Image (cartoon, rainbow, N blue to C red; front, side, top):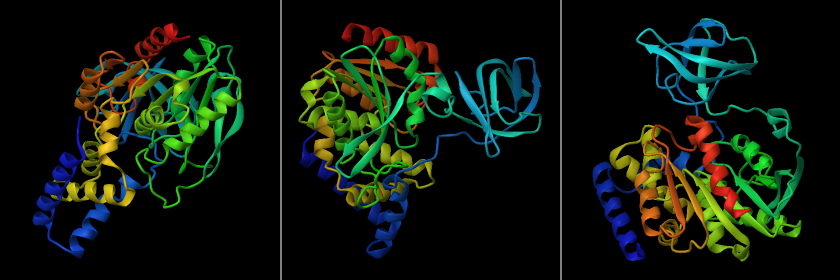
Length: 378
């Protein structure tokens, strides 16, 4: 277990080192605040690669210039312009001249040689009906700050699945898993939380790394129980997975939780915040100041966060999906949780995947893992 004194000592040491490196007083405050800005503001952009060019098209295939995006394994969207959207799958051929992938479909716009595109995980567009032909209803969760829009998909089971997207996405992130949940006849709530479009803003405008947002997930649990659910399975991505863990540990309705699915959970908050700062150009001592400033601005209780992340409160079967190549959430934190609680945690690594895009990297494998893990809980 990580105790509060140990955390305070490590963070205090980091603060001293960072301050010595970049200066003191007002300069340190300004630098730390600037480096923390993206960490504490609820982001809305879908993760995407840098641009690549379409070189040529053929029957059921498209060739791109070579780059990290075009070489990603699995199933991805390519987007261009204001609304261009197509879906590609496995790499058919790759050399220094380009990367040829199978073209699944072109949904919107005209894909042509010379088009500059971005690879994104957003394979499905719109709502469950438009994207997948699945019937759903719009509903609202009565959160403590106001109404939280949600998608409700009916099912025959008494166990409901509550889906919680991550901070660099919206409810569209949940679309890829809806077909397998539908085949298992599981009712579903795909929810929003404070700071999302259409949902109430956080009172201070900050993202709190799940520290306050988990109460919006708890409100979704109450809605499910009030509408006939006997049990719930909580399923989250990235910080959404962190909210799921916090809900299971803190909620007065945790007795109704029968399972957790955690996709790329943020379990090491300082480590993830540091990586996020570095991803946006803040490195070394400046990144450390950003991490410290983010903690101070959001009021996260690091000792309690660490206790939950280490599995102290886990009481139900937990499927932990994570990539050793995750650029945001260190894989070592997932290994540590699995090692601490082998009685309930099933860790499934996705080599070559990236943060909260594990389904994209291996969609068939991901879907089968879900099906096999969920079936005994029904």
